Image (cartoon, rainbow, N blue to C red; front, side, top):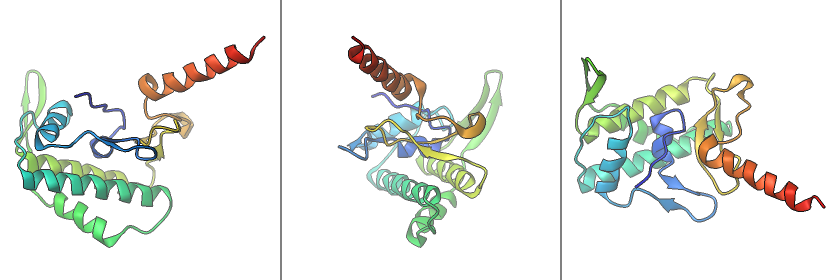
Length: 179
């Protein structure tokens, strides 16, 4: 399974495990094993976790709460108390342990600690008014991302996927319309 980590924050990358929320949503996390693979692929999270049905369900609740809270933030709405409860409850869990080695920083912990880390990153992201949250401008993409570009002029979640597709389509349209 291919997961993309282009959102600039693991909380937004978790939200992005539902692709194309506008058209035909495609959930990349359909089983606990999928969640384990996502955590493994995310470089900021512990290397190995095991997901059971309960933690899988809580991860999906957290993902959807982060999504709705991010949309509320982007649209200037008050946060939903129910979504805040989900986020704050997840963040209250034990953090992963950090260890330094010759190869760098390594986080260790179980799935609840990984979700607590993601929830804390979401809180930090949503609490900082200087963070520029955006939604990808490619019509079939619904990925939310943190725009850190100069002047916050970034339009796509990632150049490799959406940016190249949009630019290639525009090029083909120009080429086709030119006599």
